[in-house]
Amino acid sequence: MTNEKMFEVALKNKFRFPFKGLVSTEDLFDLKVEDLDAIFKTLNSQLKRVKEESLLDTKTKEDKEIDVKIEIVKYIVTTKLAEKKLHLKAREQKEQKQKILAILSTKQNEDLQNKSVEELKAMLNELDNQ
Image (cartoon, rainbow, N blue to C red; front, side, top):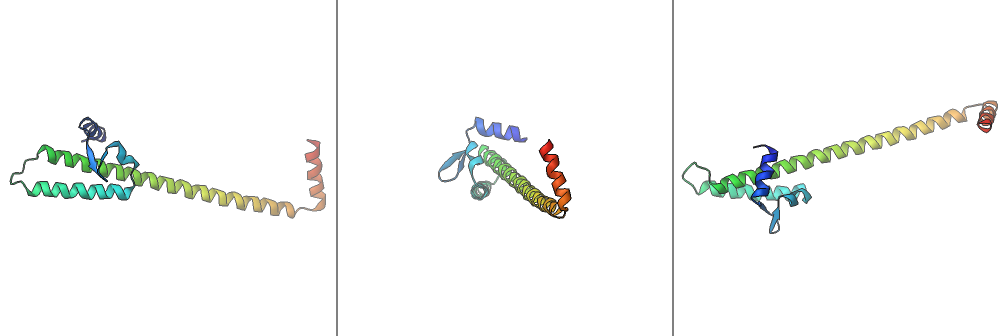
C-alpha cells in the first residue's frame, strides 16, 4: 500500500491511536519519536494478541487496520528521523561555515597587520578618495 493510500484509509476510517487515551492520525506528527515508539509497541502487542486468538489464517478487518496503523507509525518515525538527520547536518554545516569565516577574518587581520605604514596610509587614502 502506498503512503498516500495508507493515509487516505486512515483518514476515511478516522483511525485513532493509543496514546494517553486516543490520538488522531494527524496528531501523530506532533509526537516525539519515543512516543511514537510506545504507540508502535502497543499496536504490535495488539496485533500479536489478535493473531494468537485465531485458528484461521485469514485477516480480519481489525488485523488489516492494525497493520495499516503500524505502517503509518513506522512511516512517521522514519520521516522524523530523516528530518532530524538533515537538521543536524545543516547545523553542522552552519557551524563549519562560521568557523571558516572567523579564521578568514583573523587571516585578513593578520595580513593587514603585516603591511607597512606606507601601505596602510596608501590604503586609507584610497578609501578617502572613493
